[in-house]
Length: 242
Length: 226
Ligand SMILES: Nc1ncnc2c1ncn2[C@@H]1O[C@H](COP(=O)(O)OP(=O)(O)O)[C@@H](O)[C@H]1O
Ligand SMILES: [Mg+2]
Image 1: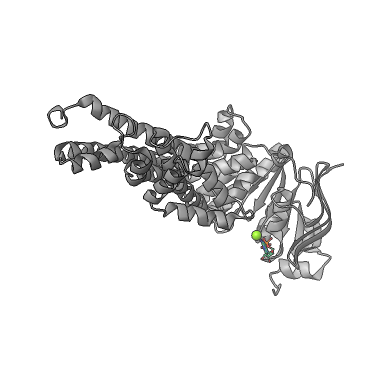
Image 2 (image 1 turned 90 degrees about the horizontal axis):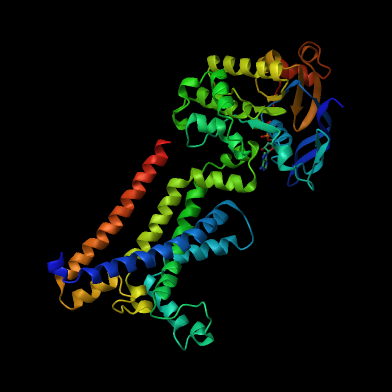
């Protein structure tokens, strides 16, 4: 079995409204899967499911064979194999270094300081290690959030529009780091982005979500050059009306 | 000082008893007040609204009325006085004063802690869970983020009891060498016309309150610098 995640008949409903409905979706080990779709399509909801932050209303999310559903919470040990970098980084009122070390501390690993330093250097923030995190710029804060996730060496790293509102320099830097992480560590990456060019640059496969439904999933080339669904083509060309 | 007050050891006794009674009361209020505040601020459960209303009522309750209630409870003809429960404090003892002060300070600590944790970015909780925090670790992280407000809650509790006079007068009785604390001693000395002594006690009370707040401010400064 080469799929890290397998979703079966998953729905998320708020009251009478179904915001996500995915019949069957596999995410392969070691791949970069991009999720694109208009605002409100259910992309963030899907990521919350994948990080076990919110249970599906019905259906099952399987992660490495472990089931997660409305009636079955994910054990802490399983939750700790996945983490998310959100669009807006929430940093603690501590130093940059303490923020990056935080997830390791939660796991009782106090010897990770070398990893923390190396990772800070990787995201280009070695000099700012002792600075209070709340004094950082948006791009720096997002790189701290990325470093904080990287030190955990997760099996799956989920990114929810990690570069929205960032300047091109920081976008480039973050994309480089993510690509290297996937290439060198084999980390499975699920990237939600509103930017189809970013999906094209980073992903091996792309999933198109619309109104909570998986319209199309294909390798990046097919997705952009010969999509099976007309709506995918329209979205990619920026012609989608919604 | 000795000239004005006449008896240093008596004074020391009063100061130490004030600190002991209010210190223990604050410790108890903190131990139960911070978890109460976190629970009310971070979770949704049946009866939460009622509990919040009770805490707010407790925060605004006149201490002297709390003293009256405790007096009625503990007096020989009161509910607990007549039951004669072993661990219930007796009227006119430091323990009775501690009980009254806990009832005064606990809602203050709980209420201000609740406000402090509610002011923390709600997105932090999901961020912590995503980093692999257990429920306890998530709650702890939120309390740490709210630390300045939580410290302020404890100070508010201390301020509410160290300088309080009505309740300790009623349930303690201002007995020399037994339940006489700074505030009740000030009242007595003023009534007796010993303004020098009253003023000296006042200065001591003021400096205790002031230095406590100073320490707290230093702590807050450090919290901000991190
Ligand atoms: N807690 C909630 N209660 C009700 N509706 C919600 C809630 N969270 C998200 N939604 C709705 O679910 C839909 C999908 O949201 P989301 O997954 O955030 O979309 P996307 O990330 O693709 O923009 C949206 O229409 C949103 O309004
Ligand atoms: Mg979103």
